[in-house]
Structure formats: C-alpha cells, structure tokens
Length: 111
Length: 109
Image 1: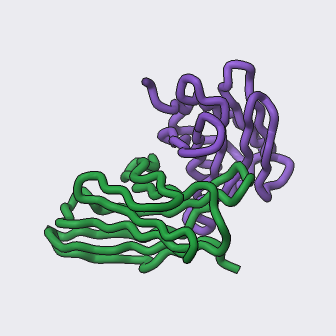
Image 2: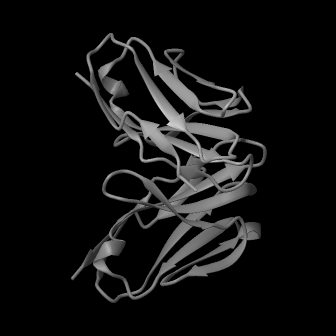
C-alpha cells in the first residue's frame, strides 16, 4: 500500500503571497490531519477532516484554511504569507480514530 | 499547563547502550503513539500503544494508562537510532494528536 504523499516537497514564497499544499492519504483512509512544525513551537495541530467535514481546528489565524475532497485528498491554503509561516507542514491520515500515518512533509520558506 | 511532557529533553549514548524515554500525559487518552523523526523531517511510526506493552526488534514500549505515562526502551543502541523521538496523544474524541516537545537522542560510535 502506498503511503501518505505530499506535494510539493519544497516551496519558496514571498511575504504576502498565498500557497496551497496537497496531501493524498493512504488508500481507504478517510481522516486527514495537518500539522505545522517550527523550531520554536514544535508540532502544532492545524485541522482535521473526515469525509469532507472539518471535525477539529487548531489555534491558527483565519489565513490558514483547508478542505477535503470526496476522494479524501486534502489541501491546505495559507494566504498573505508571513515570515513566521516558514515551517515544515506535515499531513497525516488514518482510517478514522486510531493510528495516524504521516507523509514526508512540505518545507515552506517565506522570504 | 503542559499536557504531554517528555523526558529527558536530550540523551547522549554510547553505541551499544540501553536507554529509556518517558512520556507523561495529563488526562485519559484514546491513542498514544511514539514516532522517530528522520533527518528529512518525516515522522516514522514506532508504536501505537494506548495501553500495554509492545516490542519491535530492539525497541519496546509500555503505556500505563491508569498512571498516565508511557516508556520507550531502546536496547543495544546504534548510530542509526539518533534523531528526535516524539510521544503524541489523542484525548478522548479530540480528533488530533498533541505532541510532546521530543527527546533528542545522539548515539556515538
């Protein structure tokens, strides 16, 4: 079974731009979660989707948004990028509750 | 306050040594996982262990849910064991993992 895939793997953007990251879960998994990892804040939860419904959202500004499609693939969008948005963005999938499996991440640099 | 606490924050080992990493959590959990983050940033699943004991090669883990802690044991450590180890928990019906700050393990040849 293929693992969780994330695209792109690396991204460089300028302050004020917007960015869209994509995540394809493991086949059959209906839950997709997103996390941000920075040296200062560690791993922080962004949001979780199950069957196209957001079930939980972390404490991030409204510039961070996400969605899930009917095939369980998910995208997250960050608008009006700030320098502090530079981070490793990780996506995880699971069948519903239970063990979560992470993708390789997207490393975003904002200049 | 801190809800998932890992100790020690840093660990330096000589190759072949054994070690124990600890994770304390502040409430009952549906899910507890241990991960190893590789140098490229990917989180590698080590154990899914909300309770009980599991072993996988040189690694083993024990979670005592009633006392709200989990232990990860590394035996006969190798240089490839170096990296950051994370404990993450999912509180009841929370639909997210809350991560500890991690333990950075360095194994010297």
